[in-house]
Image (cartoon, rainbow, N blue to C red):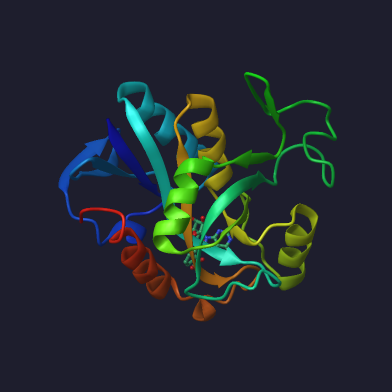
Length: 219
Ligand SMILES: O=C(O)c1cccc(C(=O)CC[C@H]2O[C@@H](n3cnc4c(=O)[nH]cnc43)[C@H](O)[C@@H]2O)c1
């Protein structure tokens, strides 16, 4: 059984070396005990890629890695990294009330009912947190990136979240539904709500991902 690595873009995985393949038109690499796939940006791309690959392959675990925006009062700055204890799907349900505001769970597995918050696997995440000496935080997923610091601050306050991204909640929900232990690792490329790309440090954030993944993969 393999470890499935997923990143939204090839840019975030440019350091990985392996045997190239394509999976339904997406870039892939095969390494020793791991497979990486480019998932595409956004929730739908992430969910479809995870489910389509998991339907055809037995997976031991799955790790989503990528860049993220840090919310103003998170205490995280550009170049910092964290693992997701849980993900928030912030676009689902009613404004201010989420899916509880609608009165329906988003996902039911066994005795567990999930509305907008989806935990990552505590065992896998705890192992990575210890190995990489990284904190675990609440990540938030949106279809739209925050465009102003005040918008970012409001999302952070409403959902008590520290990092913003566009895929993680779909990954976390998919792993729960598919029964695959999943973890999510992000490095901070920008302050969420700052749209000025001259203030983004994507290269530095990707270099941080490389340094961390080299500690857990035989790359
Ligand atoms: O508009 C641009 O020129 C531009 C340049 C670099 C990156 C972007 C993105 O929109 C990146 C989205 C991508 O990265 C994750 N990400 C990184 N920072 C944030 C954020 O502040 N809010 C939400 N997502 C972020 C995201 O998961 C995507 O995979 C645009």
